[in-house]
Image 1 (spheres, rainbow, N blue to C red):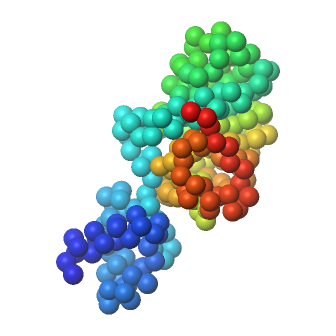
Image 2: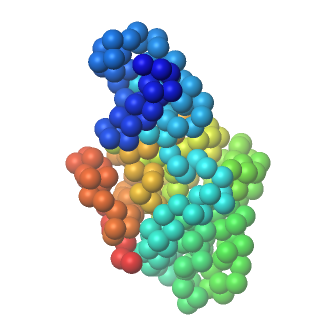
Image 3: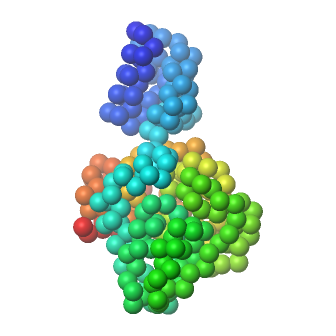
Length: 253
């Protein structure tokens, strides 16, 4: 079997089964594990999968650039955003993460809401600029351009003095075994810090993130308080999370 054929087979199996076990595939194809692992390394370098111990898992489409991410699951993100905005109560202090879904949440917040939004995303802050009842606190730091959010020691120091009622978290991967993941180590550290300063953490879970894995761990699924998904999200994507007892809220729309 040619290398290109092997790689195509790997991607097909990954799409069908949601994972690749290098030892099993090497035995099936009568090839060495080193050959399969080399293929996995090369596919991972192209962003086509995420290597894990013993094999590979689907890479998150949410690692693409911002213009591309805006085109992924737009209806899901709109429904999730409206539902998240509707969960915010007057008088609350919430932390709103960065990313395309978080910006949609900011834009969906009603004009008569009286609340405080803390964010490390300049885009989110700007989206709330004309909302008369929402006070905005912007956390500073080094700008991580992939997500347009502040990261680093300055951001974490500022977060350490804040307590919020709800954190609406954005991630690039949500997996029953590997938990919540994202593509940058410093961004993962900031998300962890925010979650641990919040009374409740709700993950904004558009479908392309479910079952996917990125390189850097944020927190295990058991440390969050729920997933917010679109009503149209296929049940088979949610079943592994539901089986762990993770509360799942389906957004209307």
